Length: 370
Ligand SMILES: [Zn+2]
Ligand SMILES: [Zn+2]
Ligand SMILES: [Zn+2]
Image (tube, rainbow, N blue to C red; front, side, top):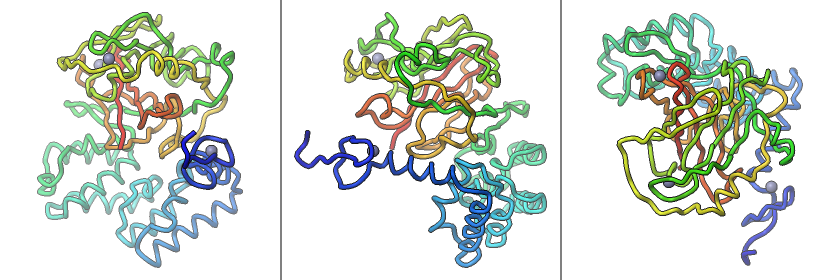
C-alpha cells in the first residue's frame, strides 16, 4: 500500500484522502434520492424552480436536478416553464416534459436565421430530449433547408437528435437510437454470473492480430430472458473485441449471429500496438461478478459519472454522444449497453459503449474517456 494511501471508510478501497470514496458517495446520494417521498420530490422541484427564477441559472441545484431526472425520472413540466421564462436552455433535460406551448415557441426560435450558434445548439438538444412528431419533422426540415446559424455548428440536427434517443437516416426516415427500457448490471457472485443472461467479459481462444492480446466477448447478451424482451434479440449475441486495442481505435465492429457466433470486422485502420493489458488484465476483466439486475430502472439511471454498467436506456457520454452509422446499411445504429471500465479493470479509465444494428447483425464497440 502506498504511504499516502488511506482506506475508504465505507468500502475499504484505497483512496488518497480521509473519508469515503467517490463511488460510495455517489451510491449514498443515489440511495437518498431513491428513498425520497413524492412530497419531498415536489419540494426539491420547487427548490430547483426557485433557483432558476431568482438567478436565471441552474447551478447550486444542478446535481440535485440531474439526480432526480436520472434516478426518479421526475416530471420536468414546472421546471421547463421556469427555465423557458429565463431563456435557460442548459442542461437539455430541463425540457424533457416541457409544455406544448414552450416547445412551439422554441421551434419558432430555431426557424429564425439570425440566432446565435450556441443558442441554436442548445435549443436543438432541448428539443431532441423532448422528442415527438413535431420536433422530428422540424429537424428534418431544418436539415434540408439550413438556417444561417447552421454555419456555426459542426453537425446536423440529426446528430443532436441522438441525445434524445432518436435520429433519422439520409432519406429522412425516423430511427430510434435508444432502447425504451434500462437494466443495471449489479454485483452478484461468480456462481450467479454463470446464469446471468448478460455477462461482462468472457474469454475466447482468439488472439488480436495487432497486439497479441486475448480477444474477449466484452459483453454476452441472451435476449431470450424475459427481462430483455425489449431488445428483440431472439438468441445470444456477443460483442467481441480486443480489450487492449479498444481505447486506441475508433473503428471496432463485429458481425454477430443470434446463435452466439461473432467475428470481428477488420476496418481500414490497421495499427500495431503493445499489449498493455496482458493476460493478467484480461483475467481481471473476465473475473468480475456482475449480473443483470432483477428490475428495470429509469432510462437515465446510468447516465452520469459512476453510473456503472447497464443495458438499454441512455449512456453517460464522457465526450459527445456518438451514435455510429452501420457499416453495412449506413443507417444510425442503436445504443445498447455501457460498461464503466474501472468497475471491471481497476486502473482503466472511461466507459465502453456497445451499439447495434439488428437489421444487419452488426455491433459497434466504442471507448471514451476524459
Ligand atoms: Zn468506497
Ligand atoms: Zn489488440
Ligand atoms: Zn445496418
